[in-house]
Length: 121
Image (cartoon, rainbow, N blue to C red):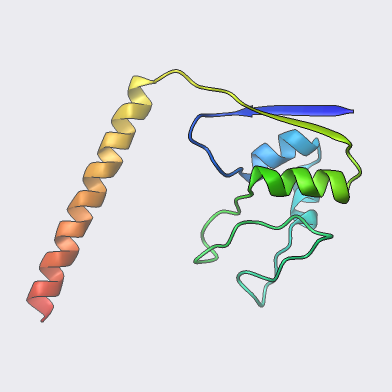
């Protein structure tokens, strides 16, 4: 049995949707597999669960390393062949513009935080 999925260039970690495509399971079942806890933000590694990357806050989305998804598929689900292929997406003017806007906003935020710090001191 061989599963494959494609996702964009630069995406080092996988989202729930990408994991769902690779494992061919419903979104709800993926959430049942995930190692999360309402009491602990980043619970310790559990070899029987799908372990997400560490998060700083609960608002951050769950992200998964491709190796962890492959380990989970092989060791827990018994999927013997898992093929994850990175697909290079050609440059998109809209995406480039949005990245530039995001960078500009981050720069503006840094400046405002510096000014706030100077005025607050």
